[in-house]
Length: 306
Image (cartoon, rainbow, N blue to C red; front, side, top):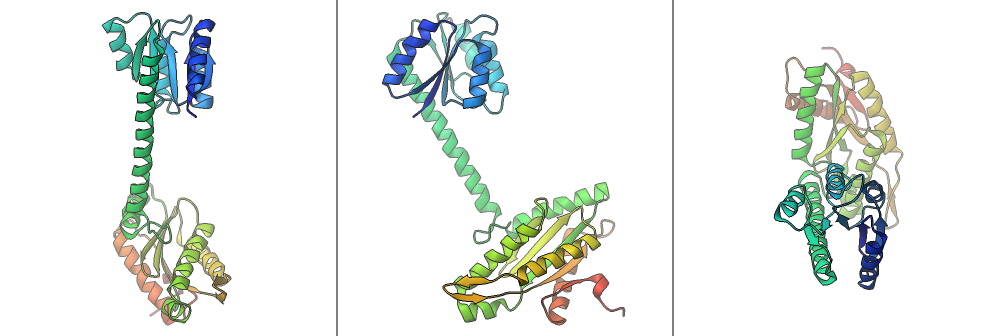
């Protein structure tokens, strides 16, 4: 049921419209001044507003301006109502963002048709916004784990390297993967492998901050950019993540298994490298973690002096 906010300083006008609107199946709210309108619109967010132009204190045009300035109410269709149907009056309210204009005395069948038009447009815009959000999600995230995909991970992380360089902030980078992932697939099936990837991603989100950037680069290989984080803090975070994954028990169709992860950790060096170079160093450290037995975190500090 669509909600209609009727705004008029004359109570009889509100009552007449209310009877017609309720008979048509609308839920009707009312306000007798511009200030009441702004308060009600902000609290209830109606589907359409019928706004009288001539009201004391705050007139309809000023009320319309406030509605359009408020992000919460800016997209609500507003139909202006006035006995003054001069072209200048109509043009001025349409230029301010009103959806339509009806003149008094109101012919309800005309008003109802214009309300239906306003509601159709509003619904179409809402559907378009929802579709755009979904398209953006599809373009930037991995569909299985809901991590950022490879392209978007690199895009966000490269921006963070610019911030780290400009503001002298720490930026630590992880390369991670699930140990013996092929063995999980071969033993328990690909559904179990998918569940391991999902659980690993959830584990990362549970340990990391919202500002950290988690990406799935491919297969069982993930990367993490830790903003405002120096190497010692990164090593502690990596160890918490490793332990959290080690303690997981994954149940797929009655088959219970555990998994471990290996992590290569490095810090971005803003003076002489790109993000891609730092990620390559983290990747080499990941392979060192595998060489040293897996289920471990390795940074440059952990390598023996040569």
